Amino acid sequence: MIRFGATYHVMARANRREFILRADEMKDLFIATVRRAKRKYNFRVINICIMSNHFHLMIEPDRTESLSRIMQWILSVFAVSYNREFSLEGHVWYDRFKSKVVSSLRQFMATFSYINENPVKAGIVAVAHQYPYGGVALVRDGPRRTIDSPDTLVALLFPEFQPVSLLL
Image 1 (cartoon, one colour):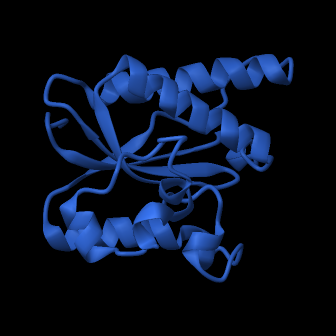
Image 2 (cartoon, rainbow, N blue to C red):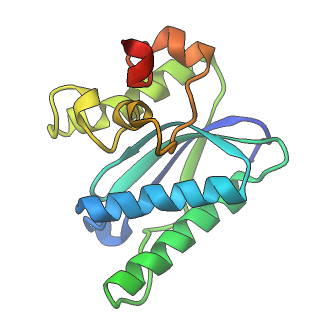
């Protein structure tokens, strides 16, 4: 059941677990697609991590928006762009996205940390802020605004999750 105004942990995996997002250009394309979706739909991106064959989003659609509609748009627009880039046809994503409602502070903290630590656990970087396609680096990037400015809760619980200008 999809609840309106809730926070969700959303994930999707590439078809056949292929590394469709391995190249930085493809990660950039995914980020650009999310930014385009933010112009079309009203939602907040609280955290994000784009790995080589899957991604994680912590997202909060406005009460007037549908998570399904937002994610369908992001996944289909990315798939069309990806297929066009490589002259391919067919499915890019394994199946429909998966999502879980984040319903408690404990779950919020665990989900937020899990998304941050994904590239660390995969052995790609030693610490989360070193991964350029994770939430910590993207929020510090500022002008790209893929991730919304951290709210008070995130700022208090995860001080590393601040734009660089606020850390100086």
